[in-house]
Length: 294
Image (cartoon, rainbow, N blue to C red; front, side, top):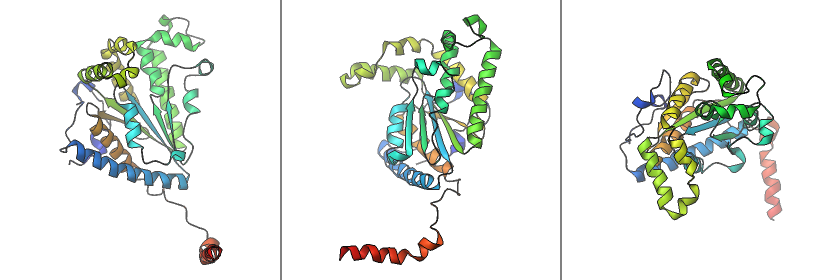
C-alpha cells in the first residue's frame, strides 16, 4: 500500500477543483484498506485518551462536501474506537429561531470542543459562505441591520465574512484548538450513483430528499464557491485538506491517516505524571487493596 502523506492533500497554494482527482489508487484492495483503517483508528483512539488526560488542547475536525460525499459514514468509521466521553459530533442544519437571534458564528462557538476533547463539525461555519452564496436570499433571514434585500449583499459583504471566519479560527487556534478542515471531493457522476442507490435500495430511501436533486442543479456554483472558500482560508493554523471521495473506504483511511500523522507531531501531549508522594506510596495503596481480598 502506498504511504499516505498529509502534504499530498493539504492546500498550500491555490487549488483548482476541476484539476484535482476525486479518486485515488492506494495500491491496495478494499480488505487491506479496511484493515489499515482499523489499525490507524486504534492509534487515534489511544491518542485521544492522552489528549483527554493532558487536557491542554482540543481538536476540531471540520467536514464539508457535496450531498452524499460520505460525511456521516466517515465519522462512524474513523472515530469508532474513541471513548464517547472524549468526542462530540455536531451536525449543523438550518438555523433555529434561537440561533437566528445571534450572529451566524454563535452556534459554532458554543459547540466548540472543550480542552481534552475532539469536536466534529458535520457541515460547518463554512455553510455561511457556501449555501448562502448560492442562495443569497438566506442572508436576509439573518436580520442583519444593513441587509434588507439581496441587492445589499455585495463583494465587500463576502470579504468581511471571510475575514470574520479567519479571525474565528485564528482565535481558537491561538487558545489551544487544533483545527483540521476536510473537503470530501466528490464527482458529479458518483453523486448521481449514490442518489440512485438511495432510491433503489429500500433501506436507504429515508435518506433521499427531492431537495437533493434541486441542489444538484447548482453543482457548478457550489464547486466555484467551495474552491474560493478553500483558497481564502487554508492557513497553517487551520489547513484545508482536499480528500478524493469517490471511494468511501479510501477517503476514510486518508482522513484517519492525516489526523494520526499530524497529531503525532504534538509530542507534548502525554499522560500527566503522578506526584512524588503518590509514586512513593504506590506499594502502600496496592497492599491496602490486596488486603481487602483477604
